[in-house]
Length: 245
Image 1: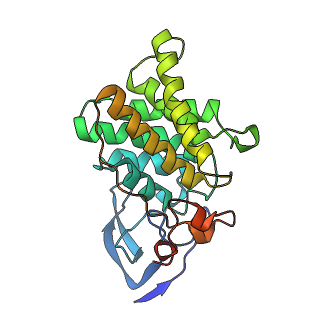
Image 2: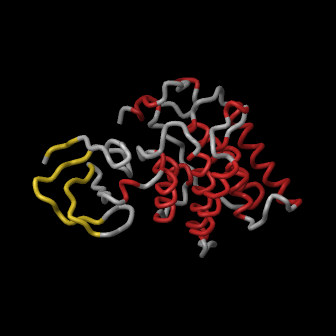
Image 3: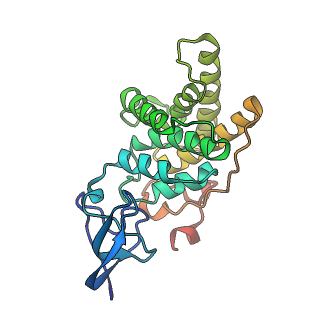
């Protein structure tokens, strides 16, 4: 078998799930698609043994986020976010990060407490709201959609809308905490860093206000070589050895 470089239907190279190189088979073998779960005669899988069928190769970034969340059993939001962002379908910078933050938080709380029999509906809703309210990167407005996404998450967590008086305050508080962390970290142009920071702020907020304690690993950023705007040693998450793995 030979390791090859394959472009998917959307032009991504490597495995759509993890980004690793693909291994080509001399003869097709039966494998289960990592996304839809259906069996196919596969011509290749990645070095991590993931196979993605031709139909799922055409999933959008939002579909990738949603599919990974609904299949995940992770309770660590940082680990789940890194898994999602490792897919080449997720751009280095882009508004999909505004959806990643609330989707990851909702998923991890569900996986720890099993509180949401309607998890899919909740993730559908936060995807819709994130897409409608923050469809584009907002760094030129001196704010960050990843931070704003924490407010969308909290409204969904409480099953309330932003017009509810107490929800208005709580949502603004979690967004404020997230944007403060992001503001203190340096300049714009790193959606990965801002996603990490928004998740860190949210975990602290949930612990303090709701006594919800989610495990949170230290983010090991593997994206530095893809980001021409990387702050390198000025970023708390930077470690070149992680990017070279």
